[in-house]
Image (cartoon, rainbow, N blue to C red):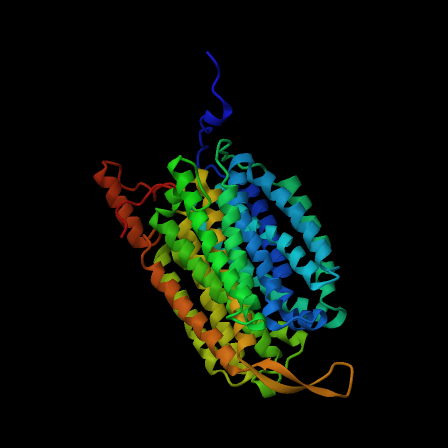
Length: 527
């Protein structure tokens, strides 16, 4: 009898999930330290460039909409690669894939600072987008090594470190850029990335959850990335090419048309029993879909805000801005970053008692109030206060909603689920930055500005108040929408969910006092 082909062999049995009694506390602590350094470093590298956007725009001679490609290019790549990296992590091991990703990311970071042209910079930033696959792989490893009871706190800590990364990146990146040029922000990050890559390879153990026979949907990922790239490019070039020009309309049309083969490929693969980039089996789980949609909308609002805040702080007073230099723009973003560092861990402490839905809704409302306050801000202090409120709201929302996902999905699917979640979030982020750039290039005013290095002045187009008003209002509405979507989730934490789980266990003739079901087990009595 011939042996079965490898493609038909069953996946190996999943190991016993970690509990408070059997998990390796010392190793889990080492993982958290490496992941914390990884999160802070990646967020530093991505955040350090935000205050330098006006400087990059001037150096390469590109307008506000085009410079948004610096932010959105790596997001497009991240959208395509996140689900593939997640699936590869399920097949070959998350540590192995994470190590390869970090090596590629290190190379991309190293060359970006030497960009001779804007095109080269956008291309290197696109390669740098592989770094976005780090987060789903890291979250999967953390979930595997911590017991269920400790996951919310671990996720809350990582969410808080997002704020810490911004708190470090924005003023430090702005200081380096203002003193030595934006290129040195990249040069200074190279040694840190190299050390983290080495630590990951040496210290981390391979994930015990493996699926060597999983299918990788390269075709679906390619079509989805192509669609998004066309839409983002159309949004970025619309103000300069003309919204009704053939090129812009053709890009929008191509982006929409590419969604058709994307859907057909996904349906075809699904009918053949293959797992696809937008996995229907996982998306049919209500909590997975809700978490994906909420973080998509939140990512859209956040990246829309980043660019709008940056340019309003930079614009001359005559155009409705605050005429801040690069360093003070970065320093101003501390008002956004510090509340993320404070409120994310606080939310993780309360989420197990209050539940994920109330805190997610609270975060969306607080963030929306902050965006509305930004539309009314007439002074720098008022704008900074609005940024503080927005940071608090996004911290509460992000640290709460991620638990809806990771405490619902089974460990064997965690790589795919977190990667698919990253795909949704990156889609929102990739659309937010170019939309902000388009608004600022569409609504402009002529302002007399001094030519750098000369005593002369010239008339220049600058974004006016209408651009910022629309940007902040759109972001506020987006966060309210995210809060509304969160109401459709099944509650998986909080006292009520725990009581209903116990009641369900009693009906199944299980002993009273059974703990909350293991990861991936549906809470049948949830509402």
